[in-house]
Image (cartoon, rainbow, N blue to C red; front, side, top):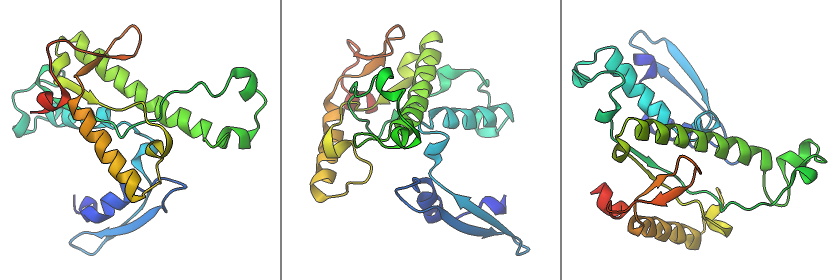
Length: 210
């Protein structure tokens, strides 16, 4: 589809255009007859902060339409899927607010409070967690749990948990966090608690990736 044949640079700028942090991105594409298609885009995280299911759905659609490269895989044969889900890190969970506190907030209180953005955090983190829970349940229920590897650090604090602090020190700290994640044991979600727990006998994340 020529109208979707966009430059990779336009795609990357668009998908990282997080509202309030970076400007929305506009670009056009043209088909062979010179017809234009306009795109007005922001970060895809506003609808799919964890894109795992979007990716799985895209592959499932190709299987369902009998794409020759996926034959003879069946649409629901998730044992053939190999999913690597890389989180971008999230702040350590802190019980900063109570129902008594938030019940007194107005619009501004929900948008900005004690240096955080409660409403935005709830929507983005909540939607990402639900996708992770769904994928974990799916792969464990079908006894192919090793086909889903989630690597995420949910203990970030200070500058490392910020979206827009790009100092050299913070960027180097994030690199180190990534290296440390490779050394951690493979973890899998406990479906009863929703928490990730190390799995005996499956080695480190680095070994699983290898």
